[in-house]
Image 1 (tube, protein in one colour):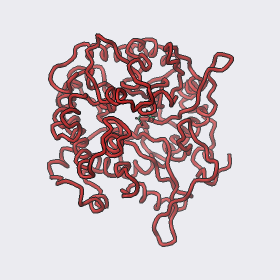
Image 2 (tube, helix red, strand yellow):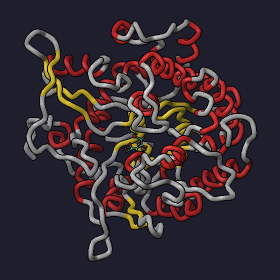
Image 3 (cartoon, helix red, strand yellow):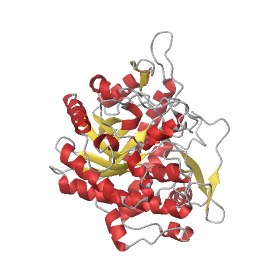
Image 4 (cartoon, helix red, strand yellow):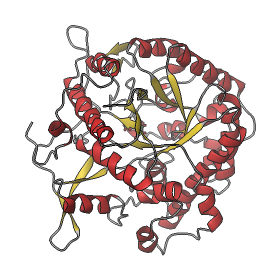
Length: 466
Ligand code: GCO
């Protein structure tokens, strides 16, 4: 069962949907530069879903679909075109009107401050490697609190620090596309978390009423190959360990969540990377570890772990022909149950699933509709996995489906359709997919129309045959 006030929502991000307008006063961000440099498959977000001109239509459609909560982000350089200093009044006005329009349609706004659109002016000064970014983010948080806390109660500071650091500055797959020395990327990770803590303090200090603040990390989930105590413990251990395999140390849970939520860096990671980690002072940790009200979890998939013969954990290979999404991510709904369970056991905070969803190769059928049975099945199983966590007493407050509309999928351009609403990017036309109407029934019944059995939703798909 889901709690009566469960936040049935959808999630988007500013840069992926808004588009631009020559008179909007928005500054340049690192993703504009990244597209200009040719790193987004020939696409760019200059129009995207044209949400900045169509948001009244979009929120009316959300209302029609019964959506009750909306996790959106504010584009930093729409508010502060240069990252600090001069405020763009058109940006303030646009987001206030958007938020009032959400509320007019019965939609509870959840505002994410930072979903990757760093002002280029700040990147030009070193971006997240420059320690001054911490105070810049605090200045931004003050503007957010002063201008939106009267009409927004729920805030997230930072979306997916693992991607900001790992994809932006380790592998360079995301903007700003830099591949920095390991020690610099650890400095960046600490700046990102100090920025989070500074923002929490500024949001609370300048809010015009009591507000709630969260944080939205991600990761792939270590899933036990069976529900034996040994396999569960092996998966839990792996899930919170840092690994030196591969070229992206940042893709882990503990380094970005333990300091923020527990006030300590993971000892195993400190030891493993001790040659690269800068001095971390007591004051740094105190700043990072500001009390917050809930934690978001962006979870899509995972990998399998079992207890090994020598008491250590062992990887379990995927089975041949395992199901995949339209961007070749594996489908394994049990990851959402285990991701919630392991996080809740460790951090003891209310949880929102701040992102979960599926890309499909959606197209308009001869009947003019967009049929997406795979997404509907995916969502039924994944949301049912959340319900198991709720039934077992974990405090799950809401589910934000990624995403409302198809949108700009970062380095993949428009090649990943994640929406429950189809967008024809040539015209901006919206077509609710079958899954949108299915989600409406799930919301109206508070989960009552979910069809998956407990086994179908959270049985280990290695051993599951339906
Ligand atoms: C992420 C980002 C989203 C993505 C979505 C699909 O989790 O990568 O928060 O902006 O678009 O997850 O990749």
